[in-house]
Amino acid sequence: MNPLYTDLLGYLAATLTTVALVPQAILTWKTRSAHGVSLGMYCIFVSGVAGWLFYGLLIAAWPVVAANAVTLFLAGFILAMKVRFG
Image 1 (cartoon, rainbow, N blue to C red):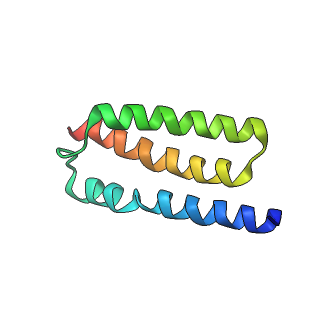
Image 2: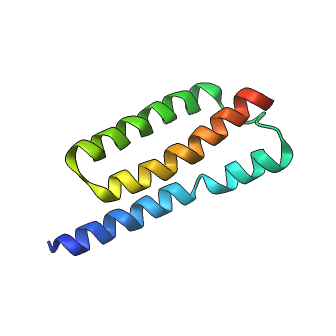
Image 3: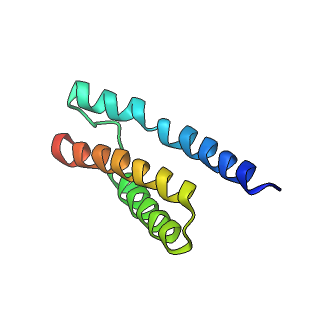
């Protein structure tokens, strides 16, 4: 497969999975409540995303790096809101 198409597929998948966190981040910020958010799940998720980001950097897979950098920010934000607001 053409490397351009491979990267485009990676960026598309990354965009969709990253954007999926935006509604939760907005809702948590607006309501100042993370009552329905699982602390354990987000701790594990943030750790996994950090691992994927590091992995992407090691292999220079820029779709992986870009997606996981943004995802780490969003998931970290939600985790911080959970810790702060419960």
